[in-house]
Length: 121
Length: 110
Image (cartoon, one colour):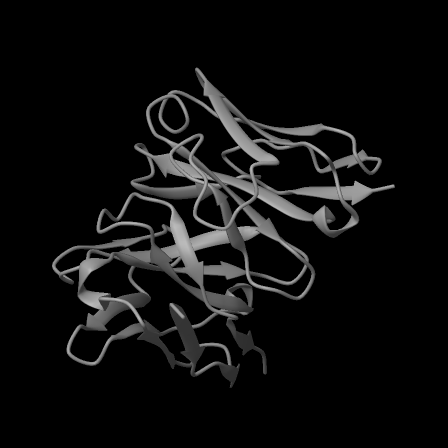
C-alpha cells in the first residue's frame, strides 16, 4: 500500500527547534513532488512547504519562510522539515503529503496521519 | 482569512444532492486547477477531486467537481451519513507562489 508516515513531533519551547521526518513506502519516491501541510487546533488546512521531485527546488509559505527548511533524501525515501525559531502559532498537526504527479503544483494525493507539534513554555 | 472562500457549513438529508462552493480570484482559481479534500473527524485528509473534475481511483462517482472562471464547486449526490466531514478546496496561487486552501466547509447529514 502506498503510504507516508510522519515522525518527530513533540513539545518544544518558543524559539526552539524540531526536525520532522516522513518515510515513504510502496512508491517511487524520487518521481514525486512532496509537501508539508499543517492544521492548527480549531483551524483549517495550511500549506507549509513543497519540494520538487529532484529536491532541486523548494517553496515556502510566507508564515514560515526563513525559519523552516524542507529537504529530501531520495536514497532513503524520506522527506524532512527542519523547523527553527518556533512560535506558539506553529502549534499544529503536521501532515506529509505526496503530490499526484512529479509537478509540485499538483494535488496532494497521499497523506500521512500527521505528527503533532506543540510550541509552549 | 482564507484566500479561497467557502461556506462554513452545509447540510443535507440522506439521498439528497449537495454542492459546496469555492470562490477565488484570477491569480488562483482563475488560472490554475482546483482540488477537493475530505477530512473525516480524527483522520487524515483524503483527495476527492483533482485537476477540477478528475477522481482518483477509489473515489465514488457520487463526488464530482467543476470550475467556471474564478469559482469551483464540489457536488455530492446520493448523500450518506458517512459523508459527514470537513471539505476543503485548494489551488495554486500565482501571486503567493504556493498552494492555498479554502477555509473549509463542515457538512452535516441530517
